[in-house]
Amino acid sequence: MSKICQITGKKAMIGNNVSHSKRRTKRTFDVNLFTKKFYYVEQDCWISLKISANGLRIINKKGLDAALNEAVAKGYCDWKTIKIVG
Image (cartoon, rainbow, N blue to C red; front, side, top):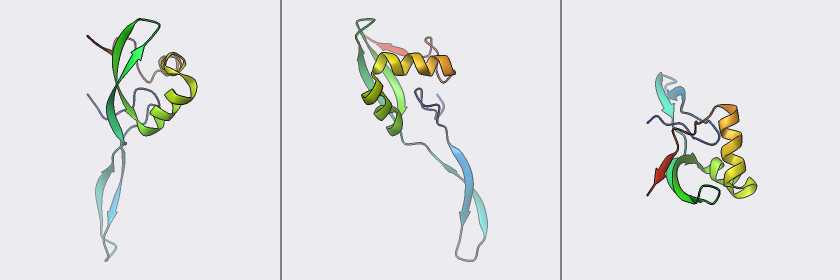
């Protein structure tokens, strides 16, 4: 799976490494992603999401159901891509 947050849609950016002599080489700025399990009360199950630190703050602020519905509406994730953990 790619390095994309399922809540915010953040993905890796491309930029330059700049040395002391101002020589530029390409590099990637990765997102602060981690895999986290949540208990989804509406479906009565555990789900696993790849989220960024900002996505975790959004879930803490709005709640899991509202954050997931908003992410699906914006197209950041799909209900099929959300992994249900036994």
